[in-house]
Image 1: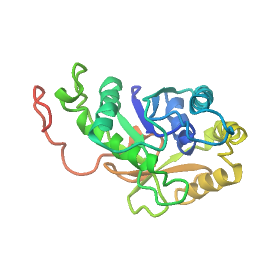
Image 2: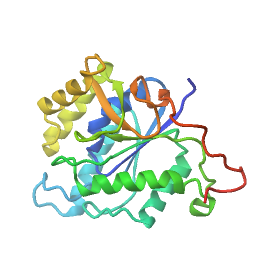
Image 3: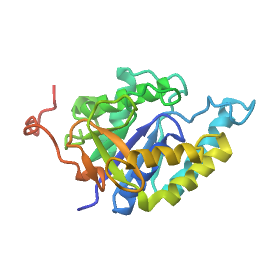
Length: 249
């Protein structure tokens, strides 16, 4: 398979820990992975009574360290931590990134209803990222960047109450890097407790019969165990045709 691009849109530095094995699996297969954080995570109290800008600087450095561990690209969009709202302005900002990066798949937050995971920033981020995939197809939204109209299926972090079909990524070859990253975050901000993460990865691995896995919701592709998200099989009929000189309505 020719190299492709996975775009990962998240709310805060450390969110990538719940999909770290998936990111590693894509890099190991030779694909490009770009993580976009909407905020710098400046609302945490993990560092004590520091000003928000100082907290943000420390979390940016942690994101840089995470990028080295996972061998990924990353950037920040400058939204305010705890104040992300899914609105047209935010969706257009993410659409600009989509048009620039031109991803072949999107991974983002889904509909989480469990304490911790249900951070309002997570749900707003996921909603904006999904909207941005369509907005990036519209030339007048993303001009002067050309619109991105190639297929870009959406995958989201799975919640325990989800009834959506699943894909599983076998991350057994990447657990060392997953736990290396978890140890960094646990030391610095108290997130990433090993027993919790082990239970998460082992629990996701049970149905497909592998040692360690990450389970994701799939919205536009068939369920199953796949080596990367680019191996997912589209569902439904042919894609809606679009004239090359006309944007989607």
